[in-house]
Image (cartoon, rainbow, N blue to C red; front, side, top):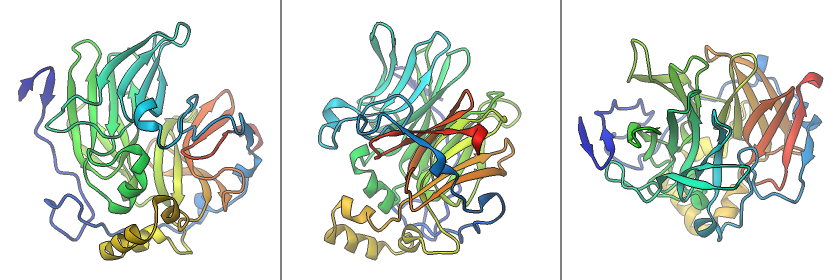
Length: 345
């Protein structure tokens, strides 16, 4: 193990990439399995349409609960908080897509940078810091960098290209060291510690799956797949009161139905053509609006799902955060926060 400028490096296990090309190609295309049928606990319903909107037209893409964003052009200068957690001492820990990790005092407004996105970690800077989760004692922070190539404002290109340059990292608040736990992830996104803090879950968005990294016990340092072939593309993961996890879905992979993202995945020539002909905004219009939240059991099985077909009330859920009987729903582009009364669904 090598130690340089407070950064530690570990020999990494190669992730199980679903691909028909060699692993050494950075942007090799992927091929998905057929999406799971929307039956049983995935049966479509209208439960998300019971949600109410909060702060309508006062927010711009509230991806994680309690943040405010700017315009796409302003983001690299103003920053874009994507993940927010409350620490054991009441301060907020924030993952900013452009600047890195911060600790913020919500009372005084004082802010401390913990890890700068400009810091070179294993030969790479962080272009797209995304989400974080923190241990109960506040010692360790686990966070994701979605890409070393694409910034958050260009996330559509990251989705369409399927670049395998995302990472899961660990920051020690005492030693100030950063350690890379997993790399070669495709759009590393939401992260969540298990209730026993023996593993960390990571959304690998463009692979439509959730990875698991073991941080203690006999399997410490190993990783596997917690849930493969999700019915949509996962964003943030948050704990549920049942002992499982809420997972927000940014887009649906309908079955029965047609998924444009599944169709394009093994056709890089067609994706390149679309890039040349259409803007980022136009390409996303090919992806139908749909609202979907999953509640997973601790063993990775699906407990239940909430839907909003066509995204009439709640489209593109980036996060589902449970608090006092309500589910607060973030979105990466909607101008509002949504709230669903769990006692009524």
